[in-house]
Length: 310
Image (cartoon, rainbow, N blue to C red):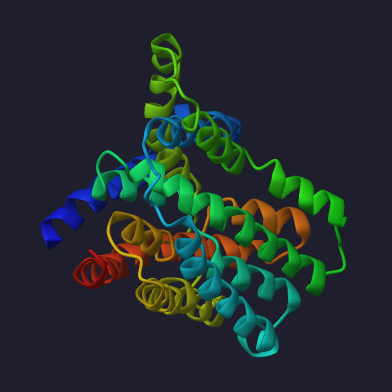
């Protein structure tokens, strides 16, 4: 994979993020309700449609799902274990630790799927759906457990299980895989309805991510930014690359798995931090910093990954 190909994949994403940030500051688009509604539309409708249609219409019979799962799950658990063991070192307060934890393991699905679609044409979205179906439940459980263990406000185990099982992205991947096993294709009229919704997912989602970026307070959050960003953008990709090599996974699916482990943290992490008593100011800084920093680290990770895995 050439530098030009990586740049061609990253530039449109950066442009949409920047456009979202600009629009958020214009009078006609400054309402929080507008962006909140757009985020819900993208997360609960458009992105699930993209994952569903991609998985349902692409033959993924040759994808080694089990080995891919091992290659991404084990590194994620290792990073989580390190952070839990060193929680008093990596964060000054329990609230700050929950934000460092989220910033170290969660990922921005819109950026990940966009890169997968650009760098693995034809099957990228479906492969992203498979990797996402493995990682989305895992990182959500890890993030929620961080709040359970370190903060007083505790949610019930049943509520945690419900959030994971009913996650719209996971449901879309499972339903897409089920439809893909049927002995007949989806009717053209159904595809004609779903395709426009799927096509809108990434542009709308990336605009919302850009609109949600906030100014970074470097001095206030220096330690948290360094720890979480080092884990997310350097350590986790390196461990995942090693895992993919050890389990013998290569090709586009390996590259997509590496992408998801190398991108910045999820923009929804801010909402979770605010709702459950985490350090929302640190979380906002992490989202903004990692979104920008990942465009510096990603080319290097992808160049190394493509040389080794593809």
